[in-house]
Amino acid sequence: MMGVAHALLTGLGRRAVLYGAIVVAVIVALWVAFRQGRQAAKAELAVRRADARVRSMQTSKDTRHDVQNTDRTDLERRAHRWMRD
Image (cartoon, rainbow, N blue to C red; front, side, top):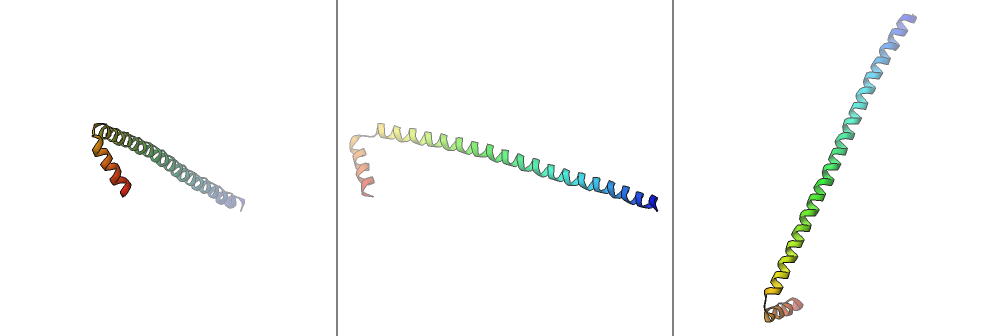
């Protein structure tokens, strides 16, 4: 009787270890995927912010260039139209 109980418990222990190892492997895989996804999202956000900063600086440069190269009467006309709208 003890031999049968011991065999059942030994088999149960091996299965428990196997299932536990599978669960731990799945948890680790999910954690790695979550971490990589989060880091990729941070990198993508940094790239988008840098692109937006570059576009903003280019727009500012173009605006300054337009203002410096436009004659005074055209600037006054634009200012009046802008204030009116």
